[in-house]
Image (cartoon, rainbow, N blue to C red):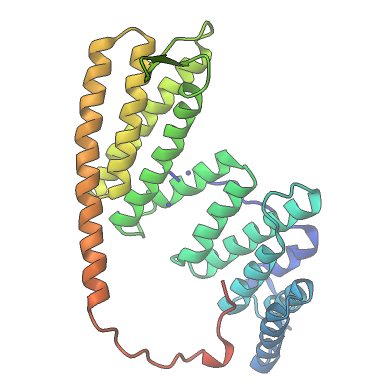
Length: 300
């Protein structure tokens, strides 16, 4: 859970009026009749299921305009806008859908700060649109937020640490840094220092930052599986960089620490597996009827 304050992504001009603070409405405005909002939400669900996403978005916008504090309307608008975004298509119109969806999800969080769906959706959209720095800041916000449990904050730190591991991995695994030699059918991999040390120093800083983030994660949750896994990978990166500098004792030490971290990660994986098996073996309680059954949320 990126492991990231974030500049707020501004929605397209046509949607700005939908996101006004409800306290800024004219004193003469009256509270909308609930049936109006309910009707719009019903139309959203209908059009969504029929694949009419543009029409669904229009009804969702109308519902938000009628009742800006309605959390269901806000999440409907975010979901249908997100649905219109096509990952991997970098046209201005498509990227605008992504930015509008991000803004809509962020509005959901102003109404429901602890909602996991918009947090995860924004992270996915930032990643899909290659907004890496915004993604890091988004995840960092979660890690620093005391409203969330230590486990969730630790997960955010661990995810963010993984981003910094990737920074080093993309450097160490490409030629000419990585050199593979085949002798008697056995491959031997060595890591060599490039002529220009700029990228090397950047990778080294990424590993240092990543290990600091892992330490923060483990301080919050010592049993974090992802933290131990990312610590393993970061230490392996540190070993590669040490070899590039000709520091063989440091390389051996990092590899030893990586092995120890890997053992811990394995223990946490087994602990999680046993917990999942235990949960599956317990009978599930009969679900209570939802008070919002007449207007169930849109499908993911």
